[in-house]
Length: 296
Image (cartoon, rainbow, N blue to C red; front, side):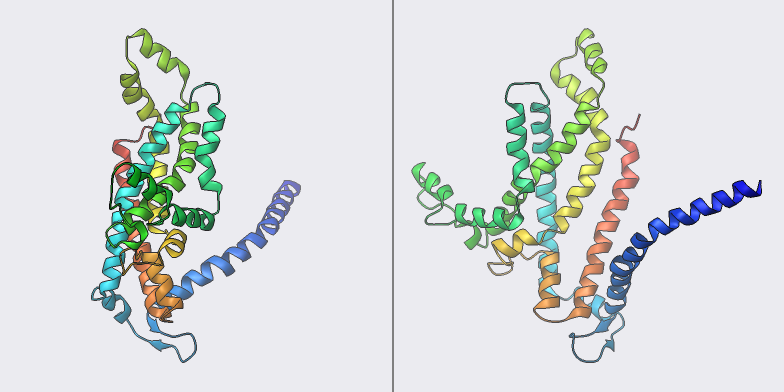
């Protein structure tokens, strides 16, 4: 009895010893920065002088900050447009490519390729495509008889739409792969039974595919919203928040406030408001998923 107890204790110590480097790394690189930034959100500090306690003034200031309100609105618009369009196109692509057709692997690779391409390279290519005078997009529009095509990234009206288009194009492949994995896990006999009962393809998609795919859809909605709120690199390379503030997003605003204006306390407060927004949206989704997600 004592020997088995000692062996169990020895195994636990061995397990904890293997885990210890990861635990230490998590505490140093995750927990400590998160805690420090939370405390910093209640201070004023420019990175050089003394740190001054500011109470809730950074959080109160946010609601009178016009740039923050514009950034929040732009992030909400981008999330509200890009997430549903991306997921819808990804589902359609996954259903279309979930067949054993000839050359299907080439199409899957072509759609997935933008996601594994460096975002900086993607943004640079799209800058060339969007060029108002020499870009191929406007060249094609002029050939179709449109004399004054949009100026895309140079226009306050079209810049946000342009960023959303690139974001959708860049993300479809990732979600398509997740949906393909979900589709291939659906038992074939469900479709065979539906065909025997006379159900058409649309009915099978609505009554079999979507319910069986609902756990994957739920996961992708959560990830899509989080990734959309976190968008930074595309905005940084494509527009740097401009023209004007037409493509200012929350994360870009946090970066600009912290590393251009050196207001670390205020930027930390922005970051925690962003965290609170994502947390609330995620909790609402988890509460609502019981009504439509099928885990059986």
